[in-house]
Each structure stands twice: as C-alpha cells, then as structure tokens.
Image (cartoon, rainbow, N blue to C red; front, side):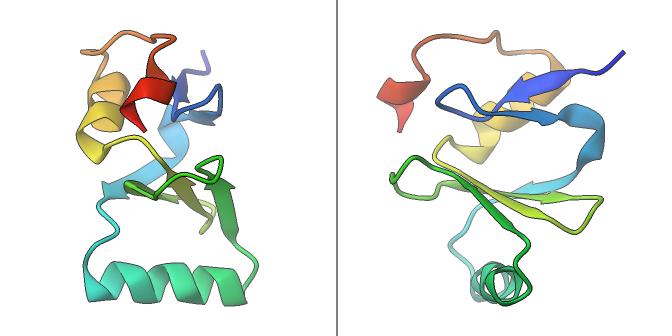
Length: 90
C-alpha cells in the first residue's frame, strides 16, 4: 500500500521514495539544491516559506519543505500524526 507523508501545506510525498531528509544549512546540501535547480529536479513545496528540510528521492528529485526534518522523519516512522497545524510550524 502506498504511504503518503504530509510535508506541509497539504503537499504529500510517497514514503518509500524517500532516500534522505536533511537540513538545508550545510554547504554540500546547498550545492545539491543548486545542482538540482540547474537540472530541473527541484520540487518546491515551501509555499514561499523558508526551506527547513531537503528531501532526496530515489528518482533523483529534490523536494524542499518548510517543515522541520525531525517532524517529517517522525511522520515517515509513524510516530507523528497528520495535523492541520502544518502552517503554524512554518
């Protein structure tokens, strides 16, 4: 069964496609985002908010989210329920 994870503002991603969830603060991750932009592999799900998590998928797409990496990881692991409060986190 397909498990979808809420990554903020009603945007969902398939849990089994996630390779990594990282913070956007380090230089290597910033380079990864820039390279993704150049290759047209970025999916921006921040709704104009600050990027707080960068999700690498097995299809080599990079998804930007305004939700904390720990929150998304908790949702993938099934520890954190889906809420309507995503907008308050961002």
